[in-house]
Image 1 (tube, helix red, strand yellow):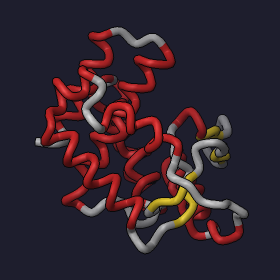
Image 2 (cartoon, rainbow, N blue to C red; image 1 turned 90 degrees about the vertical axis):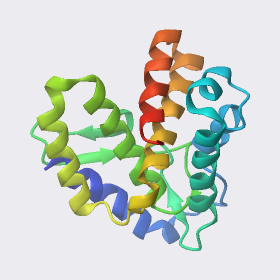
Image 3 (cartoon, rainbow, N blue to C red; image 1 turned 45 degrees about the vertical axis):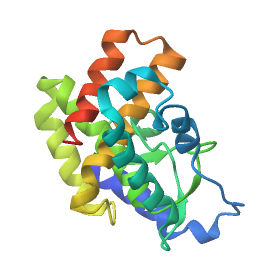
Amino acid sequence: AAGRIWGTALSVLHENASLIDFPGSTPRTVQRSEAWLGGAWEPARDVLGDSGLREIRRWIKRVLSDPHQVVVHGYPGMAHWVVTPDGAAGSLLTGEDLGLAHPAYDIAWVLGEMAELHAFHPVLRPAIEELRNGFHETCGEGPAPSEIGPALAFRIAQHAYDWHHYAGAGEAQLKALLRLASSYLY
């Protein structure tokens, strides 16, 4: 149920984007990624390689230039998803990360977060699968099957970058995330 209402919250945002008085810009998460997507951040360059970075850049370019652009949340992960204790309702908090992109941008962000949790928290896997299935039922048009790998890799690598630069993740932690991101590229 929590996955379905999370997907619905994103779908409602995307479908009603024309009601938002938004001047338009690139999602802030993409703006932050410029620091590593160009190869300037050595850990990403070493683990993802030039071809992996290129693949992620291609996906970003596609979702930012797609004619079906809407206002996207930009960072719709669990940190911004508040669910009632019974899981029957939720609120998607939004703000400074808003931007214009194809709705697949937000959907990939959520799926990337779930992929990360699935990889590093085996005990949660059954619940994550249930959450993911519910999310898929209501979230709308996600990344094409051929683009899911770079989409998930982007979210996971961006988390590695943010966690390292803003929250003190060590080298072992960031490289574990980057290796996971890389696994979706090859």
